[in-house]
Length: 161
Ligand code: PNS
Image 1 (cartoon, rainbow, N blue to C red):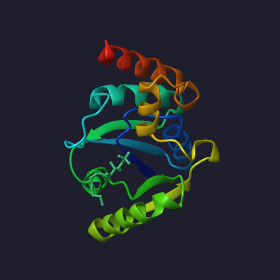
Image 2 (image 1 turned 180 degrees about the vertical axis):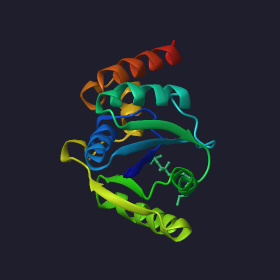
Image 3 (image 1 turned 90 degrees about the vertical axis):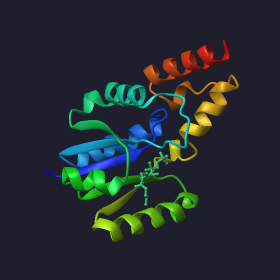
Image 4 (image 1 turned 90 degrees about the horizontal axis):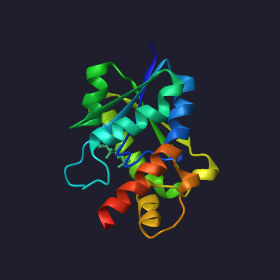
């Protein structure tokens, strides 16, 4: 089985994430989506909610497994025999930090990182920006799967009400 992992915070999953996961799912037998727990970041969605939204939106692909992980990404990979990390690169500005992480991860366990250029449609897209725009009343419906958009709008309404 050829395995790869798409890691991230996914707070929440966007069409940009989905594009990378879909493309990875065509290249590998199994794609693990790892929702990394970051105790220093207060999320809009709980880890369980994020997992639920990813499962819902990737179910059609048939070879995607979603899990959370608390700790190093390289340990997630080692425990599951995953040799490759797939990362989307939106712009040159992503490259510095991504290269640093790729080299660190490779140095730690030999795991490879493969960069996939983000579709130009989503090159400006991040979960952080989507949350900010939606919180201020902007329309982000074209940037998220419909179910995720509904949940985001509801969550913002709950928080402001
Ligand atoms: O969606 P994000 O927040 O840009 O994803 C970043 C993430 C979660 C992939 C990265 O921070 C990560 O790999 N965290 C796991 C902890 C870890 O392994 N840190 C060392 C990186 S070299």
